[in-house]
Length: 83
Image 1 (spheres, rainbow, N blue to C red):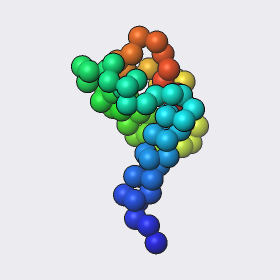
Image 2 (cartoon, rainbow, N blue to C red; image 1 turned 90 degrees about the vertical axis):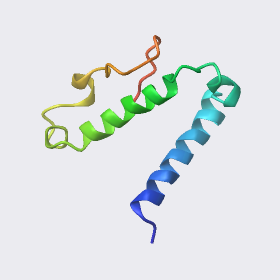
Image 3 (spheres, rainbow, N blue to C red; image 1 turned 120 degrees about the vertical axis):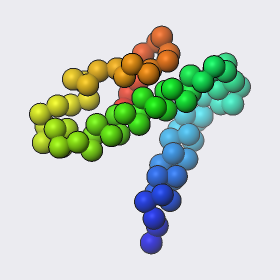
Image 4 (tube, rainbow, N blue to C red; image 1 turned 30 degrees about the vertical axis):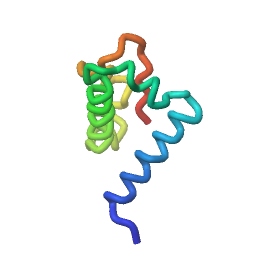
């Protein structure tokens, strides 16, 4: 049996693999973001995950499109796609 932490780590690893293989976001690409933008982007996705755990999201009264782009999103080009 895996713990929730192990499942979370596996999800992160799977997403990183997808980013490298599908999007081409390798270490050289990541190095262009040297001012904490990747950490801020991570924060934005955490906001989405927390929002998805709320009763309003679960009962359908609010969805991610209504929540909009988090203010912490650091990248001008909007590639924010929480699922």
